[in-house]
Image (cartoon, rainbow, N blue to C red; front, side):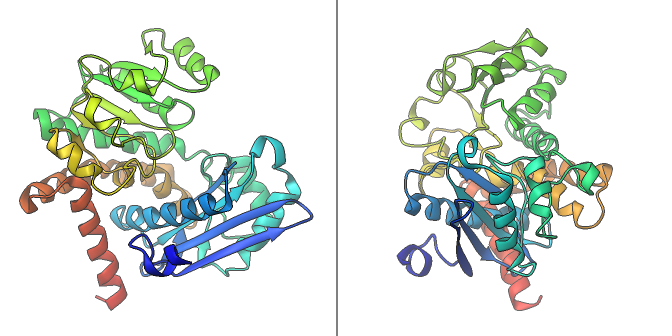
Amino acid sequence: MHTLFHSDQGGHEQVVLCQDRASGLKAVIALHNTALGPALGGTRFYPYATEAEAVADALNLARGMSYKNAMAGLDHGGGKAVIIGDPAVIKSEALLLAYGRFVASLGGRYVTACDVGTYVADMDVVARECRWTTGRSPENGGAGDSSVLTAFGVFQGMRASAQHLWGDPTLRGRKVGVAGVGKVGYHLVGHLLEDGAEVVVTDVRAESVRRVTDQYPGVSVVADTDALIRVEGLDIYAPCALGGALDDDTVPVLTAKVVCGAANNQLAHPGVEKDLADRGILYAPDYVVNAGGVIQVADELHGFDFDRCKAKASKIFDTTLSIFARAKMDGIPPAAAADRIAEQRMAEARSGH
């Protein structure tokens, strides 16, 4: 309650706690801001240590979606849901259907999609109870896996970072470290190699690493993220796993000149963006560059068209450049510049301009 009503991380419009004892469902749906339209954001299925941790994650992720959707130029506010538990253990059809009924009860104020621990097949089940479900399979009127366009958008953010820092929007000859190659990171590696980059990867799952090295034998592998951020001669670091990748321990030892990745909430706490700037590291705000997926799922509501989505996602290049320009003009880190632009859009929508 304190977080919701009194903290700087608050300002949320609505938080719904959902429980279905029969299926074992425990979920939190957080709506941060609906000034621009219905809240849109994925469903995370994760074995949180405590319910308080789950609520905090839902609140943070929902807030991030407000900014992401505003910067992507979408007519959607920010929302997010988390289902508490290990998906490998408790995920079932009954649980997903119960969850779909809770989302449907919000009457369209929240539109859901996939996130960590949920997949296209899961959204197909949720959609049986809730028409405000995106990220469904093509057979069920959806667009399928949104990680393809998310990776494309992150790649555009990297190209913009290269343009800003080195005067050329190419990654040819640059060394890029990708942490997490499960969904988005896997597709990102393909874009990087195609552009002529040298790629180093790591992932907690051995099979994810193997899939990359089987397909791209030229890719180097390091043991863990700790090793990756210290790789000598690293130009770009791409955190593509869970959030909080940039903190008081990682920033001082980071060898990369640019951080641009797909993970949400990469900055572990306020102030990290200044630490990056003080070290001369260019940070491409996560919610700006990883918006390709949300662009894709939003398009599903209007009859999905991949080419239309890809054209929209390619604009992440220009948006990222404009943020760097605003940051320079205002004398603030890029993360703060992106926040200002997004807040302005939400405020204008709220006041009817």
